[in-house]
Amino acid sequence: MSESRAGLDQARSAVLDTVPEGLFIGGEWRDAAGGGSFSVEDPATQETLTQVADGQADDAKAALDAAVDAGPAWAATPPRERGEILRRAWALMLEHSEDLALLMTLEMGKSVAESKAEVAYGAEFFRWFAEEAVRVEGRFARSPAGSERLLTMKQPVGPCLLITPWNFPLAMGTRKIGPAIAAGCTMVLKPAQLTPLTSLRLAQLLTEAGLPDGVLNVVPSSSAGKTVGPLMSDPRLRKMSFTGSTEVGQMLMEQASKNLLRVSMELGGNAPFLVFADADLDAAVDGAVIAKMRNNGESCVAANRFHVAAAVAEDFAGRLAERLGAMRVGHGAEDGVQVGPLINEEQRGKVEELVADAVDTGAKALTGGSRPDGRGYFYPPTVLAGVESEARILREEVFGPVAPVTTFESEEEAVAQANATEYGLVAYVYTSDLKRALRVVEGIETGMVGLNRGLVSNAAAPFGGVKHSGFGREGGTEGIDEYLSTKYVAIDM
Ligand code: ADP
Image (cartoon, rainbow, N blue to C red; front, side, top):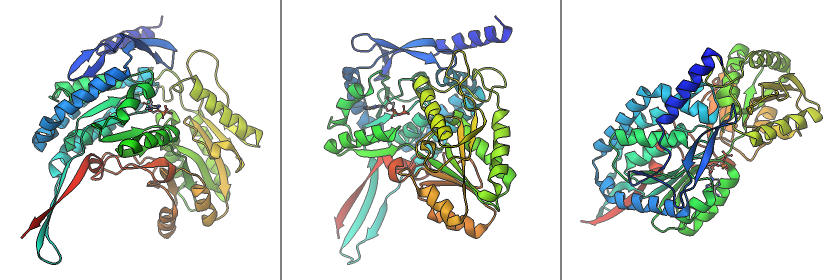
């Protein structure tokens, strides 16, 4: 065994020892009803990391019971106190940045450098919402006729169900938990089955920061629908926030309709990356590397398809291939690795299928294009040139390190291609012409745009989509509103 492998094994055991393996309900760690557990795997080695209690419907109900019991006292807690807990949790997360990052890399696969960036980004939601907690305000006005006074106030919406995906095991949780805590809501978190460990560790850190029992309850489960489904029709639940696939989001919307739950939906994407002939090509290639390769390409804001002005397309694709082809692939915890494995075989199979379809319809792989031998769900960074408009890869979410490049002749065609999708989360636009930039930004049907920039995520900004990418905003001054109800009081004078 090499020295670095032995060091990694030691660090891995140490960090796994810090993670509780139970359900977190009412401030206590407990076994699942029936005592079952499920295993969590390292996607780079396909080895089992540990076993986690497998939450059942009765556990989810107990978690909601705890959230409901804790609700009134938590809503009455001074906003400053709620904010201070978030602020302490932010500091604790940064203090434990190394461990949290390694834990995330182990269960999700991305490089430790990427995981550290996620710790900073994810923790920032706590600092941001610590500041927002004390800025929840109402209004007082005279009615137009002058005969009454209009008072409006904002109050916590009530117990929430938060469902998160595996691709950002920490940040997808903190951007729901942060505003919910700030607003005075209590909650049940159902993390993704593939990556529950980071959420369990986070619950521990929030407890250390002073979060009262029952405010946050965490129920991992291997059967999400059976476990949290019954909560959706429990009249005590008032809000559901979901990040995940559009298909599951649509199904949850249907379930939410019976109970008329407040709903936030952050769903799939199919981000276009537009490069105009007048763009700074060096900047466009730098931005493309980030927009495509951040998180191994497993992100709903990952650039999914590159539409490049015909005059510069060959140059752009060649340079992108050179950059992606030089990236180091391996176990995310090894020094110098930039690209880890995909999350599982299913995901890798889907990426392969999309590449095969594009190649069958005339595309050419400038780099990558086939899976390596050996263990782990690795897939190499890939650039496809000459992708035809009917290729599936331009319409479906890739969720992997593959960049299909296609061309356009005019601005109108570029915008039409960008909008030719049911999704509407984010678009990236590279141009040096200010008027064109504003025209294109206005014409694009997405909730977010990266203008001469390949990264949009920021806790201080409203993240979210339109069309089949969902609705509701996370982060920014908008983020807390998802957890507040407005009450209007009519006052006779
Ligand atoms: P992804 O493709 O990112 O795995 P999913 O939409 O399948 O996206 O999963 C996102 C989250 O939704 C995960 O936590 C998953 O367990 C949960 N989930 C999946 N199906 C259901 C369901 N029927 N009810 C509630 N949650 C679900």
